[in-house]
Amino acid sequence: MPDPRLSVSLPYWQDRDPMDALLVAEAADKLGYDRLWLGEMATFDAFALATAVGQAPGRIPLCIGPLAVDVRTPATIAIGVASVAALTGRAVDIALGTSSTVVVKDWHGRERRRTAVHLEESAHIVRQLLDGEKGDFDGEIERIRGYRLRLPAPPQGLRPELIVAAFGDRALAAAARTADRVVLNLVTPTQVARCVARIKEFAAEAGRATPKISVWVTAAADPTPDMLHTLRRGVVGYLRAPGYDAMFEEAGFGDVVRLAHGGAHPREVLAAVPDELPATVGMFGDAVTLANRLTAYRDAGADEVVIVPVSTSEDPAAQHTLEILAGIEHG
Image 1 (cartoon, one colour):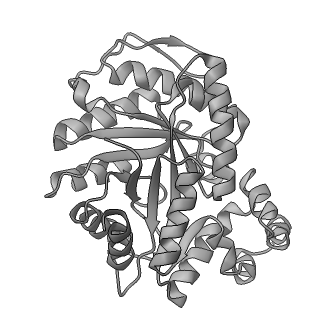
Image 2: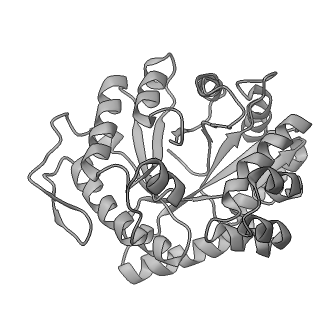
C-alpha cells in the first residue's frame, strides 16, 4: 500500500459506549481509509474485536495493537494475529508496545521491566513466528524453543507488518533495529521530526533501512464543548507518564504537569487542563485547520497519520470528523 496513508484507530473514550467502536469501524471502511487500528485498553480484547470487525461486510485491512509485551507472550500475540487472519481473510498487521505501569502492574499484576529490551526480544520472536519459522530464541527476558504456528502463516502478499510503539531513545533504537514501522502517540509535529531523525540514526547504526513512521493523532472536526471535555479527560493520565510529561511541559503546560505530579485528584487535574493542551498533540477545528495540521505531521516525517476520532452521543460513529478528513484526503 503506498504512503502516505490516512488511517483510523478505534477510540475507546471513557465517557462513551464501547460499542461505538463497531460504528467507527464501519464508517472508516465505507469512507475509504487505508487501515483500521484496533488497540486494547480497558474494554475489548483486541483479537476478539478484530475478528468481529473483520467478519462484518467490508475490506479495510486491520492493524492490531499496540499490545503490551509484558502482558502477552510473543507466541500468544502471533497466534492471535494468525487467528484473526484465518477467520476474516483480511490483511492483519501487529503493533507491539509497553503500555503503562498502571495497566501492566496494577491491572494485570505483571512486572514492567527493561521495556526496551523486552520490546526488541518480543519483536524478534513475533517476526520469526509470523514468517512461518519455528521459534528459536533465548534472550534476557523472552525465550522460545520449538513452537511453530499451527495455522498457516499469512501468504507473502499479506505478510503482517510488524510495528513497534516507541517513545524515548532506548525504545526508538529497539524499534529501529527490529520493526517494519514505528508508531508514535501523543506527539507534536516538532517531536515527530526529532523522533524520525533519531530513528534514521539508529537504523543506520544497525545497517537497516529506516522503518516507516506512523503517528496516532486525536481529531475532531468542528469540536463541540462535549468533544473538548472528552479530549481533556483523555490526556489526564498522560500528564504524569515519563516522557509525555516532559513533552507537555515543553509545550508550555508545566503548571498542569506539576499539578498532576503533585498528587492532585484526577478531577482537579482535569479542571486545570485547557483546551489548548490536547490541541498541541491533535487536530481540532474546521476543514482548513485539519488540512494544515495533517500537512504538518506529514512534513515532519509521518508516512501514516492514524486518526483517533472523537465520538459523541449525537455522532457515535464520529461520522462528521471522518467525512471531513476523508474529503481532505480524497477530494
